[in-house]
Each structure stands twice: as structure tokens, then as C-alpha cells.
Length: 175
Image 1 (spheres, helix red, strand yellow):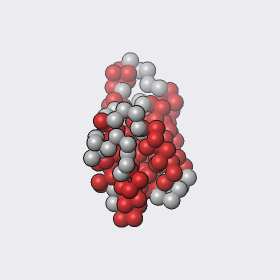
Image 2 (spheres, helix red, strand yellow):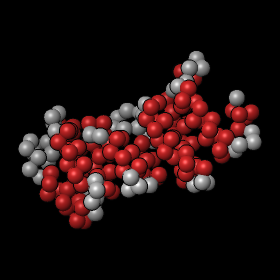
Image 3 (cartoon, helix red, strand yellow):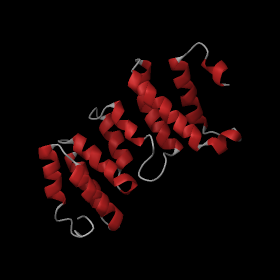
Image 4 (cartoon, one colour):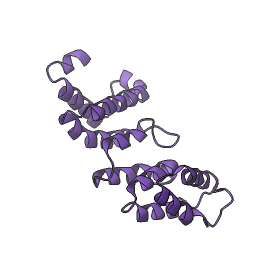
């Protein structure tokens, strides 16, 4: 449907339906096909998502994720989280990356920075997610690890997480 709709005639209608029915499946498919088959509509789609994020943050978040890197999926989701409109669990959508790529070290750091306060508070879900994210990041960077050249800011955050969860012996176990 999105492949055929070059003028995005159905976008407003499908977003309104997603908001009304709190169901995004059809709209996500439509957005995905627009993103995959039309090169020039990503900015316009971001503008539309920006407009709905205040009234329908859940819908905006889900649709941004459908757009991946060709929309502002990461930036939009982080903004919604910072505004208190998304919970830590919603950032777990990025555990495998954005669209068809893994997270950069900078993106991993951004998520870790936001989740670490929840880990300090003992939030088990955030703790599990942060460990999954760390291990995914370490696995992705395994060639760099062999050379001992991990991004120092990322490395410091990783140690901070380990120290927070098990402060008495984390360095000795992982050194």
C-alpha cells in the first residue's frame, strides 16, 4: 500500500485510525513500505510523527521504530523517554539495533546513561536490559576488545554498571 501511495494520501487516515484503535500493525506496515520503496519521504514522516508524539507517544514510538534509521527512530524514542512518555522497557526495542544495523558505541552510551539511574534504584527489568545491551555491545566489538581499544566512555559505563549491581567484587571478577 505504501509502495503505491506516492503522495502519502493514506498516511493521515492510517495514523488517525492507529490512534483511535490503539493498534499500529497496518500503519507500521504502511510506513515500512513507504520507507523501503520511497526515498524522499522520511523527513515528512518524521514531521508527522513529531506532531503526534505529544498526544499519542505510544503510537509515535511504534511508528518511529517501524521507520528505523530512515526516520528518527532512535532520537524520537530517546526524546519520548526523556519526557517521561516511555518507560525503560521501551528502550529495549534497540537491543538488536536500529533497522538493519547494530547500535553505535555512542547510541549504546546514550541508552546506558538513561537506564543507569533505574539500575541504581534496583529496577530489575532495567538491570536485565542493561546487561543484555552491554553484552550485545561487547559481542559486536569483540575484535576491538582483543586489541583492548574499547571506547573509554563505554568501558567506564560498563564498569559503573557492574559496580552498581555487585559493588564488592565486580572488577576482580571481570578484570
